[in-house]
Length: 193
Image (cartoon, rainbow, N blue to C red):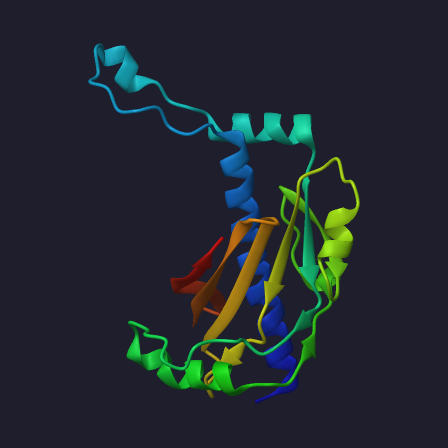
């Protein structure tokens, strides 16, 4: 496996997942929960369209960008060997992900920035960052070391997200390279806090 290609792929995959979660967090913060469904009384009620970009931009002006603390150390994923996956073509890659113990470092400056958040690197215990009083919304991302197939066109990575002490989740992302771009084929939720 060529080191250069693997490094570029790792950066691209982490950028994709970081941007996905950053955008989801911004939308979740900007929009209130949907009201209960009531019958439509008038045709006008049905035709109301919401300009989501306008709402998101107003949130960014009011609150500023979120701060995303990304762990710069990619470690092996701690997973159950009996994990059931729906896509058999990823079984060998999953075994590789479970068995890997080596550590890899990433450079957060190589990750493509999101318009919704800023990246700060951290290593080790997130409680040190969490205990500092921040005025902006901060959440934490940790990634496992990414396991690839031999052709470097499929990969699996575990991502853990922590919004607060008791609010977060972890998921496995099954990735595929299509037209020289990594896309998320599907995801399997592991834990929700």
